[in-house]
Image (tube, rainbow, N blue to C red; front, side, top):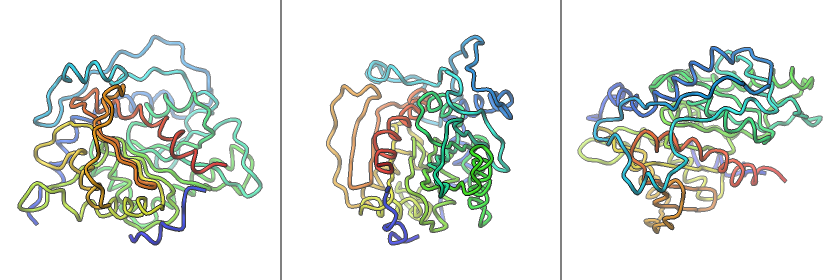
Amino acid sequence: MGTQSHGSRLLSKGKLPSSLRDLAVVGVCAAIVVIGSAARSEDEGATSKTPETSEAEPTLTMSPLPNGAPGKPTAVVSEAAPRSGCDFPDSGFGDYLGWRPLPLGRILVPSSLTVPPDGGFDLLVHFHGTEPVRKQLAPLGLGLVIAGLDTGTLSSGYKSAFESEGTFDAMLSAISREVALATKNPAARPRSIVLSSWSAGYGAIARILAGGRDDVDAVVLLDSLYASYAPGGKMPDPTELLPFTSFARAAANGGPLLFVTHTAVPTPDYASTLETGTYLLREIGADVPATPPAQDPFGLSRAHDQNHFFLRGYAGSDGDAHCGQLRLLPDILRDHVLSASRP
């Protein structure tokens, strides 16, 4: 995928086997999938948007982390990140009509959504952790159609889901049909497409971007970019990261938006999100970012903005910090994505 295909759409071998890397990633992403699976059995086919009145969900206990990651945050991270953790309060579906099943994934459509005569609507497609995303975004009234997919705790599952050419186009067609039914406008179609992922969900976005698409307006990676090490060293494998480096260069040159966040969770046997973040910075010719102020509630450790490329690094190194990255999505959407795509 070249950068030119994106430039016109502004927002208006010797490496670790992938199976081993996937098993290592299980520790940092299993808890959210457990939430999503449990909630899916309750929410599939729901049409009521009344918030649940049952007892609050218990705080999650994270599964074991990748080898080398400490089980608890350091004192400074604990004090600096009071909103981290894997417990996401549920305030219901807000203006949304409840989950509608898709052939691949599921979808939320606002009850008040009005599409113009040309049928255009703003679409967010999120991979991995759809229930925490729903719990955070549904009450905000952002006017987004939200589609989501959870395939398990392995990035290979997300890659496999989009391995066949045309899968994402078929998903978009199914989404448009559901929006057309909900709004009674047969012309319904996405006018802007935002892809987001957490943890293992990057596998789906890697496959989608590898097709050289020019209809993706923004990508948000929430502690969600890993790679094997290249042979003979500790550098992330450039081949695996190619779809993202191409997109990063396009974003840095003013093309579609890319927002990358990472923690400091170590993954000794494969490239961590911190390492892949550094790799992307080098690929766009960025200097080492200055250390931001220490008052950030999530423990911000570094930041870089370059046209439509944004990177935010955080100090947390445990499961709570990893889950906490999902809490950044609402502000990223409001402050960077939607503000650039809407008048």
